[in-house]
Amino acid sequence: NSAIPVITIDGPTASGKGTVAQKVAQHLGFHYLDSGALYRLTALSALRRNTPLDDEHALAKVAEHLHCHFDGMHIFLSNEDVSDAIRAEVVGNTASQIATLMPVRQALYGLQLGFRKAPGLVADGRDMGTVIFPHAALKVFLTASVDARAQRRYKQLIDKGFSANMKDLSMDLKMRDERDTHRSSAPLKAADGAHHLDTSEMTAEQAVQQVLSWYAAVKTN
Ligand code: CDP
Ligand code: CDP
Image 1: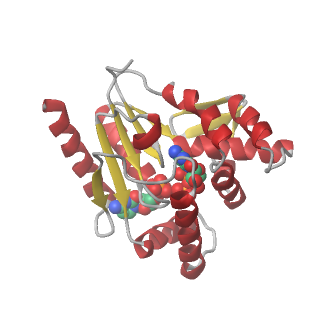
Image 2: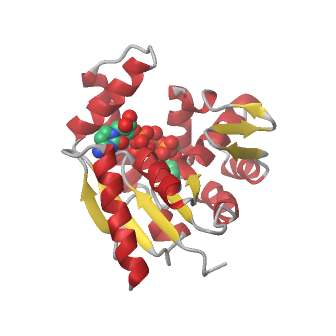
């Protein structure tokens, strides 16, 4: 299936990857892979089974045997809708912890490749362009300042009725950035040939238009 086009969108937390990737996929009629959700599903499953978080082989088994499916906006684990459950703070933190383990990453490798289906795929995460789809037609590295990202998370949380404060959010973002950038397995970094896009001063729609115009350019080449 190497003829099926892939667009990768990698970047730090709250840079807008998910929002932009989903909209680009909608515009093009492509499939969408939220790779972070797979790490979150593995984390949720491990937490529920009380899998020791220091046992990388047991965690890899959990990842290998994930019974999950994606249906538009909803994510299911063994037929239970866990779309909200995987967004919990504890699940995000556990996901970021187990994502540092190579056996877990390897266990999720094949599952991610399976999302590449006609007519095309938009995949977002940390290592989509560097490790999972190194031959993608278009690679994008999305960034935004810590302030802009903290403000976006703040708004998302307040809109959902949660309480939040900017100081804690900024600290949490910096900690995640540190862990994602400095881990030895598949660290967050721009892929060779990636187009960089700083969205600090952009709306999500402007970012979508930029990605679509880059894609139109590679398609005609
Ligand atoms: O919401 P946030 O950006 O923090 O996380 P996410 O994209 O839902 O991913 C959850 C965790 O999985 C992140 O903390 C990453 O460390 C990890 N992850 C990864 O290692 N590789 C990916 N391709 C996607 C996510
Ligand atoms: O997936 P990631 O963690 O990178 O970010 P997200 O979950 O897509 O959250 C980004 C939030 O910022 C969403 O509420 C977007 O509407 C908003 N936003 C954006 O994505 N891009 C901009 N250029 C401006 C705002």
